[in-house]
Length: 126
Image 1 (cartoon, rainbow, N blue to C red):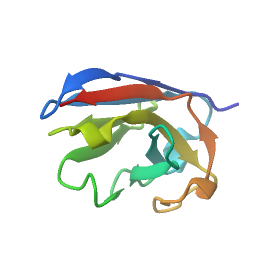
Image 2 (cartoon, rainbow, N blue to C red; image 1 turned 90 degrees about the vertical axis):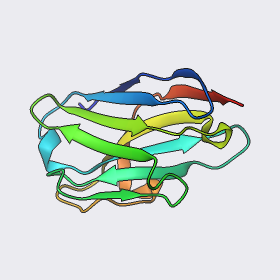
Image 3 (tube, one colour; image 1 turned 135 degrees about the horizontal axis):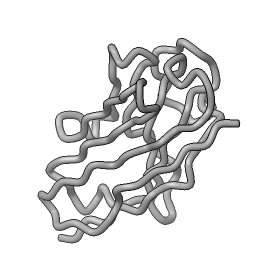
Image 4 (tube, rainbow, N blue to C red; image 1 turned 30 degrees about the horizontal axis):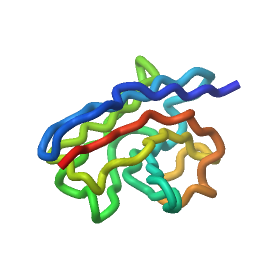
């Protein structure tokens, strides 16, 4: 059974930084791409970033490129999202997700992920 637990959210002023963490349980964590998605009230779930199973490649939404960095530590079964230069538009619930199939490059659509965490709230004040 795979469980994903996010932490690190909170309230921050515009221009500030936060680091989100995602702790994964279950076997073969290092075989799967991982991603972060976010969902703001009244909006659809949005892709934020993904990282390949090895950590060798990363992918980002245009809206966060250059500000957010995704990383992973396969020895600790952890995925991270470093968020810098935060904007009010970044306010959302952030969830980590594990890819449906092993050894994929880092899909960007929710249907390609089948395990999800409960999410952590990020609020950016202006």
